[in-house]
Amino acid sequence: MTKNYLFDFGKVLARFYPDELTAPYVPQPERCVKIAEVTFDRAYWRPLDEGTITDDEVKAAICSRLFAEDGELGCLAYDNWVKNLAPVEGMPQLVTDLKRSGGRLYLVSNISQKFAAEYKEVAWIKSLFDQFDGLIFSSDHKICKPSGEIFEILLKKYELNPAEC
Image 1 (cartoon, helix red, strand yellow):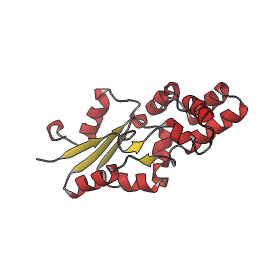
Image 2 (image 1 turned 135 degrees about the horizontal axis):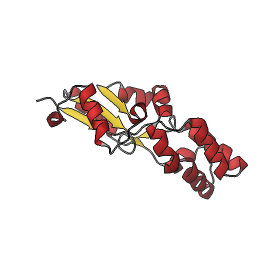
Image 3 (image 1 turned 45 degrees about the vertical axis):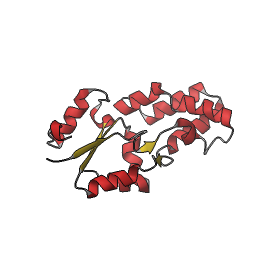
Image 4 (image 1 turned 180 degrees about the vertical axis):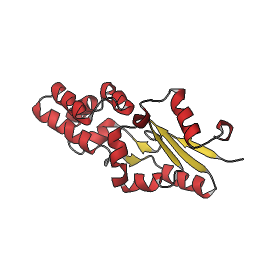
């Protein structure tokens, strides 16, 4: 029986904590938390994951909610969040071990077009994804998890048997 392993990305393979992604640009803890809350607000991130809002629209919204300098810092954190992601401890090794054991690896994740366009510039993410047999990014299909439809897309595209996943 084929062993197919399905992964999510955020908080499974990668740490995704807004304050950590904002901290390189805002060293003051309270200010960092405030800017991170606005910059990584689900009000933007769900439409980003659905591919229904642009990066420029997100940055305009960030600037409209934060005062001048804080808005600029929020946009700076937004522009650089992909390169500031760090792996969840142990997960790159787990992926490598599963691949070496003959497993087939697939990603199904709520991911924006920005991430899809930039992840290859981040060495650890590119190296990780190079081991995968297939990647499904929600923004490419305008469907987010937990919708079963995105899993159907994965199964059909890669001709997978659900019982083997």
